[in-house]
Length: 185
Image (tube, rainbow, N blue to C red; front, side, top):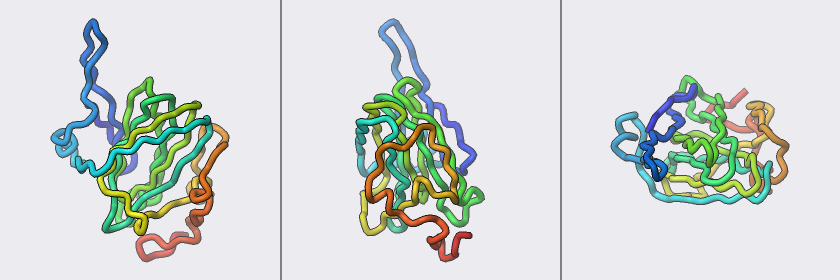
């Protein structure tokens, strides 16, 4: 695997290191030892699959707080998505900054999402399928979220948003939230 750190501290884009032959290729998609060597948490508590019927469908921005913080390893196995993360760690030099990357079945990239990063994505194609390896169990009482269209972050989604859950439409705007005990803006 080829680990490339993003401009957000501790978040990585992971490309496959393909071993081609006449049949196709072989590549490792996960190795606990390699994750540890890069200072990443290799714990996998759950594996989830998300399927999206329509281009423009948006899911997010979700995260969990202590004691149920979670890491994620996101991969698009069919179609394409635009994946976005936001650093929600008050002590981080990239606090409240965001990063986006296209993940697709064609580029076979993955995104490693550290603990206390909000995560969401938009389907860039119909029938987009996304696989998540998650480092903590889903714990509803510790779930938090941010509005995907919050002007505070000004995320530029690549296509018009066509579908969003009621839950994701009702997350508070950042100016209404308190993060890490202090008001944000």
